[in-house]
Image (cartoon, rainbow, N blue to C red; front, side, top):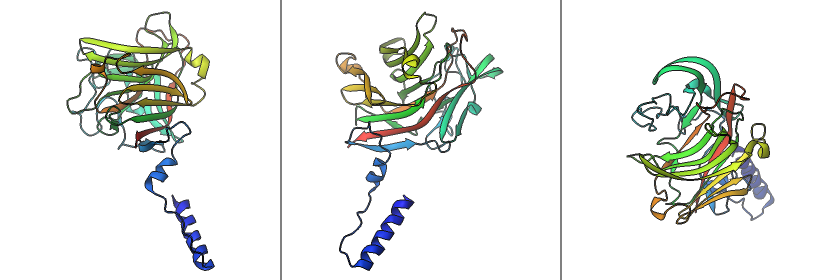
Length: 304
């Protein structure tokens, strides 16, 4: 922005001194936002929110499961097995704020191996984990106005890891479901023989009668080497379709009316959850600690 301002001033001086009649074109805010467009963003979408993670931005994120300044605004954890520091007992890591940090323009959500005496929920834990949410901070409704979410990230590998980037209801009377699991990676999928799968899932219905449409991208780490190499992950949510992209390549589509019933298509304001995680029923195996879900940037675009 400063360079462009200087350029404008120099051009004005040049034109004034030379007697020319041309004027430097004024750069609009939308044109400034377009500078944050990668080659994969649809041309008719404009940036509405972004985080480049030069620092931890409290206006965008809260650590853990609750809002940073209003504890009544929170994710819906399991009332029997969860608490302020654990969503439910499928997870094996106690949430700690220290496991969320920014370094050299990157957001780290870290799993660590350590002994913790938990207070909420009460219990002994062998691991800690990092978690952020955008409750009442960054939110949108793609059915109401088409959105394109782009994230540049590295996902950890290992049998026990369970990192995810997902969307939950952020309306005033939030409910679960719906839940859109944009990118949900399983080192091993629960206590099955399946491994190295990246899930793209939509959960809908009722709490006690949930349904889902899931697609598993197999051999994810083997194909993308995502623990060592950054990739650009895109998600397009519109009135009639959801599309998933990796480095601009379409990898999955969900259609309203065929893959998801018309009446269950999400039409709510939703916010972002990003977390590293560990699967309780999976042994460590080849998992190395510490490990991190690393985010270079997150950008949300909206169709004109």
